Length: 565
Ligand code: ATP
Ligand code: MG
Ligand code: MG
Ligand code: MG
Image (cartoon, rainbow, N blue to C red; front, side, top):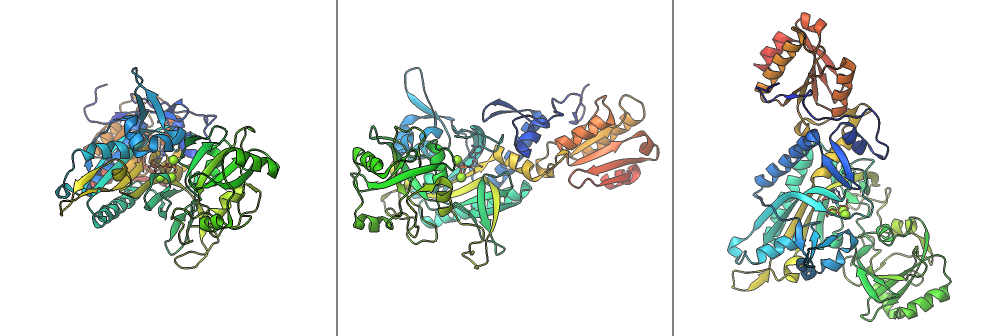
């Protein structure tokens, strides 16, 4: 059938809905996006977007694009394939660890598939932006990212290939960086609101990416992997904001080889990185390496202390003196342990910071475990507790007890400072004719993750209930009879009228039972359904159903047309 208007037809659309829940989908968004025929799994953490899923994705992208354009950021497109040299320059070829998808070309040149683009853009701009007169500048892209997540799961929430909007800004001074950061933060709030998300901006730790000023936007959802605390006064923080780990370096002590500086922020994440089963009992021993840095050795199983000491000596690490303890902010008996699966391996990490974030100096190098008193033996959960803000703790702003919640990190803003520009020699000429590294900010929105977060917040037992701005179409016209000369033509006419008004309209013109059409409409989640049946139509009426509330109303067609006109 030719389509005179741009009405979508269920008879032609590829929407392979599923009646049954897919076996390995644990949470609502994963299950419903599969069932509603929007996505299909290609490999672990890798998904294909089918027509309706692609439409939603485009809606989310456009909201983000409009808000970026509105604050003067300019859209670009960078390659996903990035040369390793740039990552060697920033130091992240090692530091990023196994999450970085690495590959080599036929000549043996190393590349990675970009998990983020600080290196690439810093390298591009260092040869282009030469003068303070060209600053500030904010560029963004909407593009696919690759991260070899240790646990890809929950469908689009934590995948290995996903879509992100990433923006980067370049500045001559802190004031300018702060202004763009504030503009971005305001844009991020508007983006969350327009997507229909119930969210909290939360204080967060900058972790691996560097810099110190950062905020995460958390969509509240039980399925979220992040734990947060919030207060009626408006204060909210990532419960892991006091992050224990500031870029630990992992060594294989048996070979004295640096393995990685993984992107982990808590002991639990470090344990996951080291393949230590959660809540297993583990042992650790502190020491000092040749550079005088704190080293914590994580040792497998329940070892005898002498054995651990022997391993420490074999690793070439020295005992901490009382002075060292003081310098690191350690208390006697405060060092502890974690275990590894392979008995033979001893791994040491340095720069652990189990510092609750309210401790002064928590972000300074050399401060470790200030204020924390660990026992000799710990399990991972105990360690995790030490680094978190707990529900019930007093709010640092108003003193009331904090409430706990779970959230999905949909986006994050960072002030990077000169971390990348300094490492990569990206400088500009300032007003006094001096070469200085740029100050930079970076700002990410998880496009595909947001799509899943929206579904987590907008669903019921029958399916998805898309907020209007991100719905694959606004209205679904459902003729209960197809191919007759009364109901079907009336439905077609109404669909065309709605479409002319600028609404996105789909008509369910399949020769299916009414029950099947209703079930699919609820599962897919069109915000409005207009049901055209023989009986009501003969009374000059159609039924309108609002998906979000389930409210149904008979509407007089004449009145509807008048209203539309
Ligand atoms: P997480 O803490 O969940 O691992 P992140 O802090 O590592 O996320 P960022 O580096 O801040 O992520 O990336 C910006 C945004 O990209 C995140 O806020 C999130 O929305 C999205 N994102 C990150 N990792 C994934 C992933 N594995 N799958 C889908 N989206 C992701
Ligand atoms: Mg991550
Ligand atoms: Mg994060
Ligand atoms: Mg983040």
